[in-house]
Figure 1: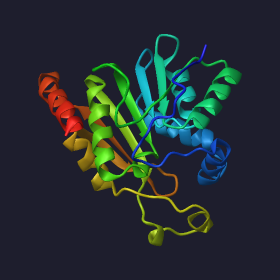
Figure 2: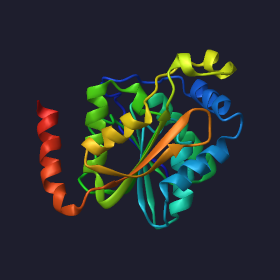
Figure 3: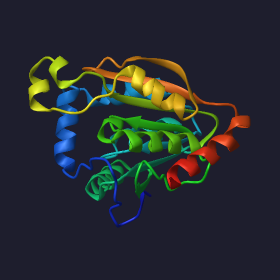
Length: 231
C-alpha cells in the first residue's frame, strides 16, 4: 500500500512545480520517449542493492521512486518527498496502478522530516537547480544527515546554461543548471566524498555519486547542520 503523509504544502525558497502532467511530458521529451531506459540508467549509477532504504528527494510524479522500489525488493523501502501536493497525487496514483509500495511525504528538501542515519541511498535528480544557493546547501546537509554510515547520494542535474544548449528541446524548455564542479563542491561541503561523476548520457545531464564520510565525523557534522539551519 502506498502511503501519502502530509496535506499542507510547505513553504520553500525554491521553485515548486505544480503541473504534474506537464512535468511528465517534459521528461518524455527530455528522454525522447526513452524514460524507462533513463530511469534504469539513473538507478544503475546509484548502485542500488536489495534490502536498502532509499529516499528520493524532489520525487516529482514518483516514476523513479517506483523503479527504485522494484530494485530494492520486498526487504527494501523507498520514500519519496516533494513540496508539490499535485506531484505527490500523481505519484500516488502511479504507485497504486502498478501495485508498488512506496511512502510519499509532502515536505522540503531543506528540512527533511526523517531521523538521522535513516537511509542507505538518497537520490536528488533534476531538482537542485530549482533551489537558490543557500537552500541547496541546506538540502545537501540534510541529505548527509539522513544517510547511514557509508551511505551514498546520487545527484543528477543539467550542466549547460541556456545559451550553451543546442537542439529544439533547448528552445522548448528553458531550465536552470549546475556545473559538475559545483555539484561536487556542494556535496563535499556537506561531508560527502565524490566516488564517481560524469555525463549521464541523456542531453546535458550529469551525475555525481558521493559517499558519506566515516561515522566518526557524523556527530560533528550533524551539529554543524543544525547550527547552520538556526542562523
